[in-house]
Length: 317
Image (tube, rainbow, N blue to C red; front, side, top):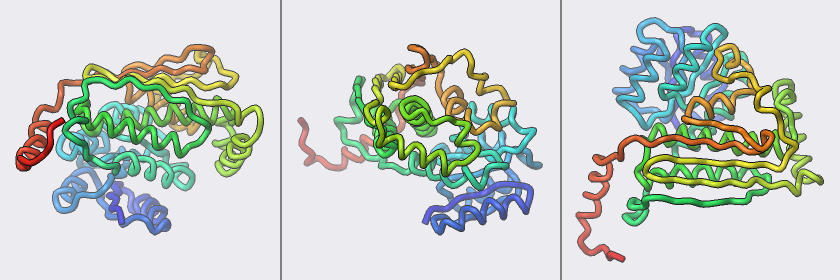
């Protein structure tokens, strides 16, 4: 069972979040009253993820995100935002948080969001010596409208970045989430033409309509065209759908704090927060994203190499 640390100075909110998580039967929940308390608990027990409020005494959510990114980079942090904390939340996403959910939509979005983050964070961290020495990979995919393949491709990209030793682990997680959001946007809003307004009104109706259209013409005939370039210098993703397109200029700036509380803009906010460049073209049907890589993780490479040094019998191709 996975363990989640819920951090909030409001006892009512802590128990509300904990109750939603425990109701699934999938998680063990522990609690902290503020950021300082959370760091003390992290010294005793490492959770699989942290869910934190932003406005708290004794180390707020933004400061907690920075501390966890510095001292516990493998632990993803999920923000729980309330009205009035939008600007702080945008800054926290830029500094290292993996995702967010608004408090007014906890019942609708909390479980699906934490599952997405945990799935992205818990994939295999293995890799062979050959994979560790990849310098660049350029691949193209043509995908049907299946969310399972979207999740699988996102996980594959994350594992490949890990094998190539590009980006710190927290950044790999964030990049894979941004990539997955671009795929899901293209699938739902592009190929299936399911509006984000319907998701805001009735999430079940939104999913039901998507399922029906994935089996009907002309939607079933549409595909996603994905180009991926992973190098030691940068990663680049292009995702094109076959929907009717839209006017990118008509989209409000998702990094505007006033836009944060709109569920319909969540994917684009994460994409723009986690990537260096996000560009729409071809009438909104093509999105291209890029992230420049920092210096290689030399210390991690050396640590992994030492594991193989202990096995002198390994074959070398």
